[in-house]
Image 1 (cartoon, rainbow over the protein chains, first blue to last red):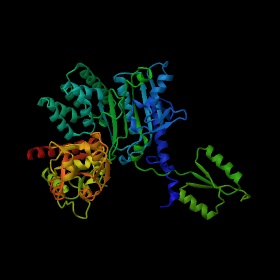
Image 2: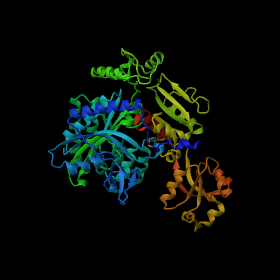
Image 3: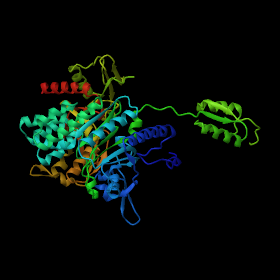
Image 4: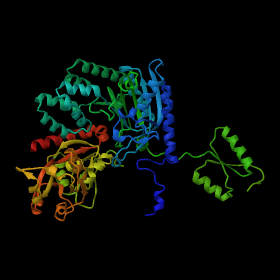
Length: 391
Length: 223
């Protein structure tokens, strides 16, 4: 093997992004930025590195990229932007009037197994709504997520909504022992129906209870799904949570967004910090969720400011994978002829008119220029009058 | 493009043939569908299905990445792959056991009062086609072993001293017997499963769910 080649490799799970893809990413982020702004979300920029102990609680230990400061303190690259933003808000924004609406754009880092085909550095665009419990904030979050996916240009997408407290409560209500709830939830996230049957056999619950658990596992659909799970719920808190979710659904119905959403109570998301509504966005023909988010009422409390919060992030890398490839943007004008100063001056005049202008700087002859214009698909040639003095 | 065809990944060989028989019974198109031909893609435009034929170990890969919405493959392969997929139905065919096996003499050596004590094999070498399953199993017992990955005929390894023991799948036990090996521990039982891609399952629920229910019912009727 050529040993020189290995000098130019980049770490596994990282990616060089070339102009064509960068152009698409920029367009998407600009669109999201305008949309988030219109909904009153202001951009903030957290640091890439945080102290390890501050990130440890909310993500999987083995997925954190760690670094050691010369002083010996351990740092970690942010595995998402939600945790650093929670820390930032609890430190700097306590005195603001509630609710606080924030948005962000940036890379996150997770040491994922390579066989999963995921990037270890990935770009996210997202929003966080702090200091607002309840239906209003949940509805705004889901509606904004649907708007974002619509704006991105996906032909066909769906947002699946779950509620982790309802799922947990229902499992309690139907008599799954406390020690087994986490195991059953794990089976649910993997839709492991076979594992569920084995677990039910092992738990030896009454037949009717088993049926109810199966129902929680596989219920999926629109607004009517909520009535079905209400029949299973026994405790008052869960019944209330279902009522709240119905209210969210009604709001989305009025907005005409329900064709893009469905309920699925096996959606629990990977991060441990979720406490209420959770959701994931899917695009037709793409194997991974495009976006995800939910309510995390406990996270800010860990940083000394106990306010409720809800948010979501869109995976820009995933979105790029799900969208059709873009055409390269081409310039409007190529300025040729004359001397360099004339060409630069002419180019500036044209740019002031709002055109995209490229200046010829390689002393190409007429034929080369023609070929270049054709290859770069530049709409128009502008020839500067005057003597060619340079070159 | 075959965008609205539901793609199902099927393994080559006996498991795949049994899968086809099952799919035929629930009314899916299977005319001329074979897992041992040179043709690897079979499309049924009218019925809306497409099958891709691949090595069993590749089935979870196609499904995890969404190149196939569904797949049929053994639980052994799923466990080894660690793929992030949904496991929908136990199809109850292709039964095999995952076992730890030792040469007869060695098995006797670690057995007291008829109970084999695996702990005595700490720090020993284990040859297997399934390194992930083997690592997970031994680490769940708090043991450290050296796992040597082989690609076939695992039973040879202890005979020539490459490893003290093996982790392998056994269906009849004939191969073990012929090689004077004894199964000393069961890791788990495996059968064929219907698996689904996480997103396809949710986006194409209306197509996938009836198929899932039909297969479930068929399997129940059979057993």
